[in-house]
Image 1 (spheres, rainbow, N blue to C red):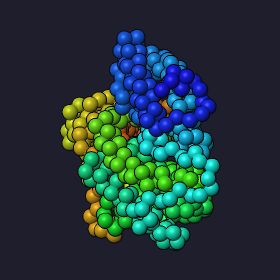
Image 2: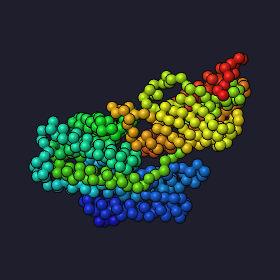
Image 3: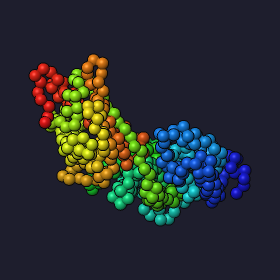
Image 4: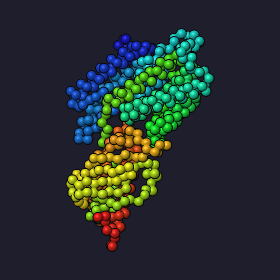
Length: 466
């Protein structure tokens, strides 16, 4: 180990020195970040923030933004040293230098670091002979491309179902390790296993990856771990990550000199992923509180609209395709009591939301908490009653409100807002799904209140629900 290793990108570095330097830099970086956070900026800090960045405190957003800015700027020297070390390590392992791009991908760079620490050095001899495959690997690894592809798909499918069982059923956490690391790792394993005996083409690697993703989905459906809708919602996230892992695996196995290093790489993946899932579970990050607001204009005064806000009769069957997929939708609302402390029940197809009233400002504002959340959906599945863990306590509505504003033309602007937390990661991916579904639920209720109120506001209109 030489100090010049930290800024010299030429030459090679063995896995032992690479591991030492990386552990040393990570240790120094962790101490440095703690000092910067607690002493300089008086902000909390945790290692879990390297995976789940802290949210901006809306009470003092400027202070937190300044803190995060300096954390990034002062971390640049560590990043530069890491890049130099990684380039030299890739050269020593005989892997494509393009893989250095993974250094910049959050979460995946942890798995990349682990792989570089176990990958053996590529033989430096100029001999053209291919290094012999390990004896045990020769015994079970077929050379025929079709049999190799079949074995790759089987191994990847078993690993994928096992990781899903660990994450969903045992740890019961839909974390980054499940939705980000696992798809990437499965695509990587599919390519490496298929190319363990002989280098395979990029098309062949993509084919076994796609087949593996398909069979994992079918297996999860058959063993009653997931339903069709949730699998389809996760596919736009999982498939690109699996193909990214597939590409990395292709770049590793395309050179025949790298074949002997594939077995330890695959073994490391199988051992590292459960450990990373346990680390993810131990971190237990707090989901961000999000808000969704929807608005309609109603040709009726607030006094009429208010009566339909606090409770409304049964809604007609939905016409939206979304609500024919099993997504829960509202049926009616009833209220017990009057004023603050009253209990409002918004009945959905999967059960009632129990909403104690917190603010009763008639006819301007109705605000309520939520003490009971029903299941967000009924899963499509070959089984009658499928209850995966994410149906219980993973989508949590915490507060809601209806705000009524009198407009100059005598109409009412009715705004409905829901505050919720979604215990699914990464938040940036799952939030648009949740926001869209909540918005459609809002519009189903608001448009019904609009039609009821406008009918009641007409001369001789129907009386409101009593």
